[in-house]
Every structure is written in C-alpha cells, then in structure tokens.
Amino acid sequence: MDETPYLREKGYATRYRDQRFHVGYGPRTDARERAAVVRLLARAANPRGPWLDVPSGAGRLSGLLPHPVVQVDRDAAMLVAAGQAHARVCASASALPFAAGTFSGVLCMRLLQHVPGAEERIRILSELARVTTGPVVVSFFDAFSLQSARRMLRRLTGKKRSGRCAVSRSQFAGELRAAGLEPVAWHATLRFLGEQTLVLCRRRTD
Image (cartoon, rainbow, N blue to C red; front, side):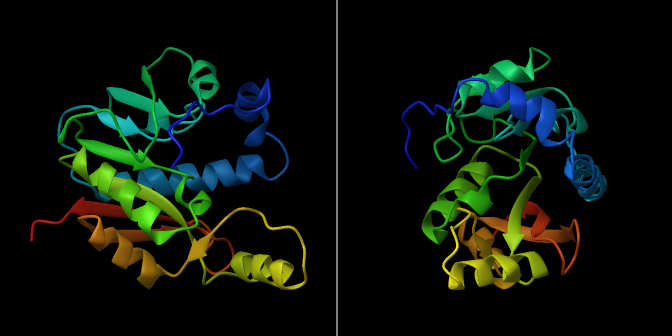
C-alpha cells in the first residue's frame, strides 16, 4: 500500500463526517453497523488497556470502544475532522507505527473492501494481530450476497467498477488464519442482502 501522504479533495473529510451517515440510507447503515460492533464487543474478552481504531475516519465508531482509544488514519484531514477526543496518529494500516502488543483490542472498519488483493489484506490483518494482545473486530464485504451479485452484474455489462472487493467467508477465514488470527463470531449487517460483514477474531496461539 502506498505510504505517501493521502490527499482527497478539499473539504471531503468534513463532508464525510457531517453527511455520509446522516442523509439518505446513511442513518440506517450507521445504526446497523453500530449494533454489530456493540454485539461483537459484548462477546469479546476486553482486558484493560488502549484500543486502536484503524482506519478511524472521522471517528464515527471510536466512542463504542473501551477507552482510551487511539485513532489512526492515513488521511490527516480525517483525523482533524475527528476532533480531539482521542489520541490521533496519521499512518497506514499496513505499516502501523506501534510496538507489538501495544493495544488490548483493535477495530478495523470499512477498509478491506477497498483492498483487492489477498496478499495486501493479509499484510494489514497481520499488522492488526501484531499490535494487539486482545480481540480484533474487522469488517469485509461478503461475496455471497445480493449486493455483491448486483455489483458483479454491473461489471459484466461494462459499467464502471466501484473499486470495492468482496470475498467469500471461507476465503476471508483463510486470510485471517494466514495473518495469525482466528475467527470467533461473524455478524452480517444484512445477511444475504448486504455485503458488510463484521468478524470478531482472536490471536492464534498455535
């Protein structure tokens, strides 16, 4: 993944913070994702210590995590939009600037659907496993869904690609294990309809 500064058009971060999950289908998406995170966290062992939110974006879900929270995003403008409630670090998820075992848990939301290659996804997942001693909650797009089928149909008919990538649960489970993680629980925000799926993982001990 490119480690150069990540720049979007001016004003994108504040528009994302103020509009993305506040208009149209956004509030329903936000509610489903929050519920999924809370449900999985309730099943996780939550030892004391800091949590990592990466990529944090504008901090939408940081408040759901046990405190203290460190927000990481490679877009500096997103971290500015997030405010100063938590510690913030500008970095890439594929090269986290933290020592092994720094955090007691990690949330990685809405990133891996933008990563088309298994090798790069495993690299990111390995970084998440490296920096934590506790649970990892990570999201991906499930290929076995109506939304994914519609996207594939659009590609086959020559329409513009969305830049998003969906994989099967079995493939993603293999990638988790290759990265040193073990899936514990799965939660789809809209099973069989929507792609967004969250997984609670723990570090492998074998």
